[in-house]
Length: 226
Length: 226
DNA sequence: GCCAATGCTGAGAATACGCTTAAAAGATTG
DNA sequence: CAATCTTTTAAGCGTATTCTCAGCATTGGC
Image 1 (spheres, chains in turn blue, cyan, purple, brown):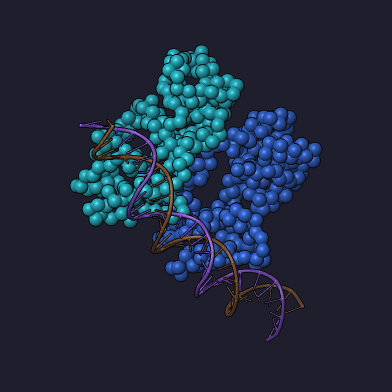
Image 2: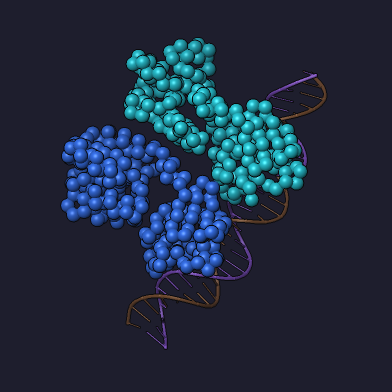
């Protein structure tokens, strides 16, 4: 399975070089010139790893990490910086970066680190139960509950809810959901997604609980308390 | 106390599979694709056991052992190899490996060897009888009971039930079960698993007891009271 | 309030999945 | 080396799940 890497740096030269190098290594590569664009990319494409420059105009690396972690986004982050002072390194890792690389670096080193990151057992986070509001979903036991009331889901229903719960409060576009949960490019006009949203709503609101899965007209859906 | 295992192999597939299996067994897992990376991992994380492939590009298994033992590192080593020639086995052990396993192997076998190597807490837990609900299984005497009613199992049936009982309440995916109970290179494509689940159910419910082995459609099976 | 555009729902068709059964293939044992 | 036990393969069948489609409901712009 091909991993997606988002490279965030304000230096077009470096961006270009990394783009080519990583593509050559078999990664799918996205780029962003600053922190704000990076956040948009993350929301839109959910990359596996973000390579993040520390120093950027506008929203800098640390800012990006803080924003991501604030919404509980756990995307792997590899921090890149020209400074090599120990305190920076510490701050970077403490803020929530998963690895750290000092410029200038050899592309091979970067690639090695990337592979190491991707191999790192996401297992811990993958097997932890997810909660949002009074929704509960356990990836390992596949138990699903709304408050005290537990309910059964089919595979697709489970996958979809799992997906929504991994991105709470984020507005997810229909194509994105279809791609990530169904795994194919959305073509023509079929409405599987609507149907499944319907199924999920029926089950998550069977006890008269307030709606958590909201429609964002012309865009997609959000898991949100309201 | 959770033991840390370092797996060193150049086959990403095997690496991946061992990663999942060992994590499922409660080990912390590190990986390295070659000897050099392995040495770095050892230095950085001091694993309790190293699972080491004999044949690797660059620094091979024997080389790793030699280097480690040269600096008086006594980390336990379990050697893995496709060759089964006696002289290799001898060389492997003489160079300083602590145990030896020939590919292809069933992951369950590997796990057993690991526990044996780690002796301390493991032996106890490995030879202790397992129970779940009113099911009873003794790994050593191979006695199996449902409440007061004891029943006989064939080897595969026993292995499968043993596996399920080591992971109660967890939904185990079919591929995972096949891999761990039948062996990682099992390709005989079909429905052995279903058949064996059928056998086990027949035997565990022969006295009209409620079902404990449940199907999770499109995913796998769980051992669970319901 | 009207009308496109968009989303929801119910019903049925198509499909995927798992269970059973039986028999073949492989081991094991006396 | 035959008899028996174990493991695997294969096919058929029932049913849960997934998908499609058509019509209805809702939304927001005008």
